[in-house]
Amino acid sequence: MAVSRQARVPKAPVPEPAGESGPRARMKRMLLDTAMDLMQQGRIPSMSDVAEAATVSRAPAYRSFPSQASMIQEAVHEALGPILAFPPQSENPEERVRDLLAFAFPRIEAYEATHRATILLSLYQWTQRKAGTLDEAQIVRGHRKKLLANAVSPLRAQLGRAAFDKLTQALSLIFGTEALIVLKDIWGLDGDEARRVAVWAAIALVRTAAAEASRHPGAGTAARAGP
Image (cartoon, rainbow, N blue to C red; front, side, top):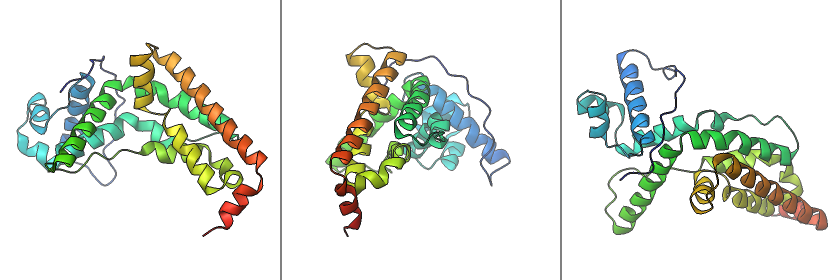
């Protein structure tokens, strides 16, 4: 399976993972870089594809990654990179959401082919699971849940649990690769235009949630007092 091709994005040198060093760690690093290069070309590489492109046998590839899914999972984590550690600088929830999206969308677009390939693999795994033929670990997605909850955390007490969850769920519809795909593929927007639309929609959602809480000031307290 292939997705739209995309230019290779230069990667800064990444240190070996804490607690790992030596030839094995360097081999894993090289294989992961190779996998990401192939994904940036619009491919969903198998373990054999990565080993061949890296000019090594399949044995070290399988020692580094137990399955294709685990390899893709690490590639996605690497592609997301600094987004996962994004530190909000403001206590204003609108500014926090705006800053997160403004920071994240260019990085997501830079590794767009990698993320599209991951979505494609995730959908393929879904069909396998429905058919009862999935024989490897599933791709796990959902980083946006923690990121968005952290962004709007100043509203947690005001909204109460149910409204807070609804807000983060709504924000998840306009954050991430799927939102970028809709705005680019269906609406023909470029990356900057897509980011501006997503930021506008996110701020509108935050304001709506805060306004609803202001009109019903006891709702959040009641929700917090519940079981």
